[in-house]
Length: 451
Image (cartoon, rainbow, N blue to C red; front, side, top):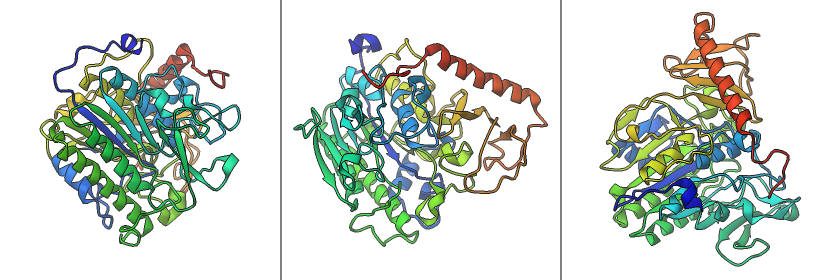
């Protein structure tokens, strides 16, 4: 049924593998290839030398859950009736069964699909009962190992122990899953995530695969494993980033050793900007303003790096903006899977960019941690119709309508609203069209709490 709905077409003899590596709360300026002076990321730097840096790449939201929703579905999370905030263990909602994920689409085209890391798209139903319909195996993944929500959250029925779930396996209260719990020491979490992903890739030799690897770090609390703790000149935060870099190297090594190096796209990015309130335990946005939980550039302008030797040109930089909404249409094009026609998508294929060409701009909406769209970008222009500051003083007074040329002024320093009323009018129209699109489509959840 799903294959018919998606319209999976005949695939070429060799289907490209796809790996998406997703950090949690990593800032634009936290890596060697984006200019950090004291964090060492040799594996990512090598990937940048062999691949393409997206200098204007965006997450789907300034917080976790809606950004992950956008990545897997290509859609604004509001289209499903979720607000823009994060889900907590007892929350009743999550990713809806009617959504089509990257994993479901690629699985319909014969891919093996695995997820290793942080899910954060639903866990409970009717209070705090575990619900397998909210977890990855119900949304296209053949395998899953990881944490169902953020690493600072605890299941209220068993406070103090962070669950690790995996599947398929024996129940432990979750049909189709096994489960274990870890205590306060998460020092092995990053390393195990990398190992599980690498093992999946090795076992997929000869078969097309999709691996989604969302690390739990550098979301607080920070933990680095043996061999990394106390090693970085940036302190504990640097230790964590350097261990993630090592994990990326482990994954790429597995790809190369399986002989799939020239047939695998690896994309590395982050779910939102850094959590600056934690000071040294938070990341850096370089020249961008503000961070996580805001609609300033620092909230959603994140690192973007693509690697696929022989396809993605080496040492390239794409200055056209793109976002995680683009992953689903890109993956479907690469795997010869037709896009669904019964729903709106908010991204586009960036295959032309991966081949070294340009991509046309489409409207990009910035979401608050609720469900408000306080800013929108089209081309070089970004319009704020509302905003708040979490980490610095407001330099713009009472003016709530701000316009920035974010290509000339990526730090959003110089308001151009008085100079270009016609641009403001155009962007407001685009924002209203998005709102109307969401309203016309309706939402899956509405007032429901689940199927």
